[in-house]
Image (cartoon, rainbow, N blue to C red; front, side, top):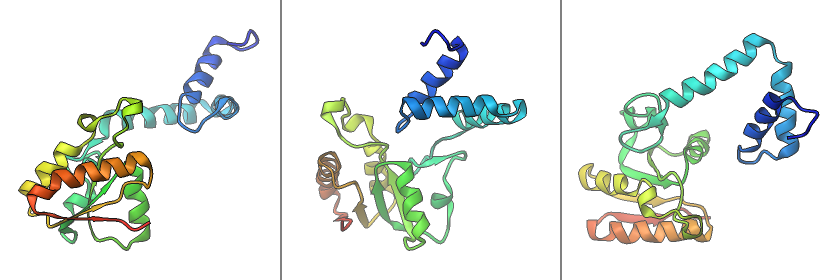
Length: 174
């Protein structure tokens, strides 16, 4: 902490700096911006963060983020429930949905297998996917993980788990 900064400001900068993609300069800029906000706006931001943190959880079916038992995609009667697109993160669902071209369902892993980062299959939502395929008459699983070493490893691992279940496993073109 710099000697010229109040401890509360230094903590705020440090908290912003912990966010992904936010460097020291951006963290400082955000902290000063928050301090320039009205008290009401700052409290609304704080409340939005705490409300989201306390009410958002994983969908019981697809593991996407929701504030209900099932997310809107899983609740929708118009979605093709026999096809599941497996993605790494909730933001990937948002990207697919923006295109308005995909009309089936998703399954969010919440990461990829990455031994170097200490992430194994048990830390991901793979068990939930296997259970879903077994119980919900899923006919096709589209692997839409990123074209990285970790994404490919995760896709191959899941494909091997699904093979004995007789479900068609395809890979998203890239």
